[in-house]
Image 1 (cartoon, rainbow, N blue to C red):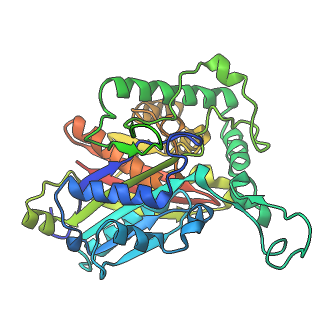
Image 2: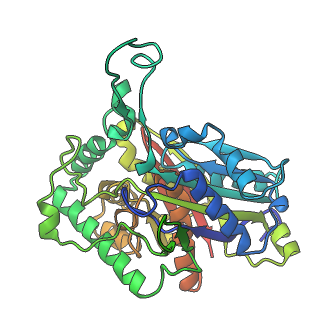
Image 3: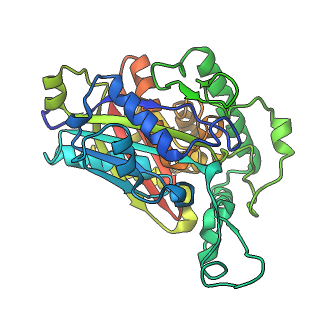
Amino acid sequence: MDDTDAVIVSAVRTPFGRFDGVLKDVPSIDLGVMVVKEVLSRIQLDPSEVDELYYGTCIPAEYAPYLNVPARQITLLAGFPADSISLTLDRACCSSMTALRLGFRAIRSGEADVVIACGAENMGNACHLVEAKSGRWGKRLGHIQMVDILFELGYGKKGFNPVALDAGEVSLEFEIDRAEQDRWGLRSQERWAAAYEEGKYKVGQEIMAVEIPQHKSDPIVFNRDEPPRKTSLEKLAKLRTIYGSPTVTAGNAPGMNAGGSAIVIMSRKKADKLGLEPLATIETMAWDAAEPRYMAALPAKAIHKALSNAQKSVDDLDLIEINEAFAAVALVSLKILAGKDDHKYKALQEITNVNGGAIAIGHPVGASGARITMTLMYELMRRGGGCGVAAICGGLGQGESIILQV
């Protein structure tokens, strides 16, 4: 152990909501304020102690009505002093894990002692847009065409494939068919349900409760993930594929969700000074990128890079969390990590996303990197410690990973 180790001292997220669920009218900035206040409250940390805050979000059309610099707005709305330092960043679905990596770097370099890494998204709250060519510079009279930026996430406008198409085609290159992806989707739902029954997703640990005001009734207390559902392989097999993908359906992919997540990291020296017990030590972090088509392989690439940095191998890992942007992502990455060894491939599946993944929990893109990190950490804590890795892919071939020691 070293005084400059980056340690996690607090981590929390909202329950994740459905596209059209109870959070549908809650702006992502408000979700960010909620988790930042809660993550500080749990350790009674004054906002003035925070050196830097990094905030990940990647659907700018959602926070557009609130103008820009959402990270700055969040710090001020959460009661931070006016001289607080913050940064909004967009690395697609990797964003809140990238926020963690920037905080990790700042602490390891000695430039900061206390950092908050957070992220939020409310995908269903995204605006329809009127482009300047048909609005500001368009017709003086007549109808104006609107654009839904959630459709293909806008990638098609510049000639990129929908990510579901790329993931499906690449999964077939790795001999992972639709049926195997459906089985993984069902597994995610079943494992979340079992974990919930065991009390693993209870308020007070990973989850916080959120009160949603109502016009003519008492507030709704939102205290569990909304997307999980009961299904079967028979039902999943009947679903149509999406965006021309050969394998990806609404059943083996997450929805377009809402939620926020936040993590406080400190130097070990600062945590000791404040009398805070580290929950986990960040051993190393890594990022990577490749051809956009191979997004599904990026968690594996980022994990390999992190393992190399830490001088470890896959065999040293007790648990793995891979964000289920699609079942194809988890399965392709695990097959790469296994070196296409079928026995090892099955063994790695048994230690991956043991409490369900984003297919069940949801994937509010800016919040997911921090979410899988804390899900990994809390499960390692329940098991009495160990070493684990969390990894996530991002649109157009990006990846992030983090190795934790508990």
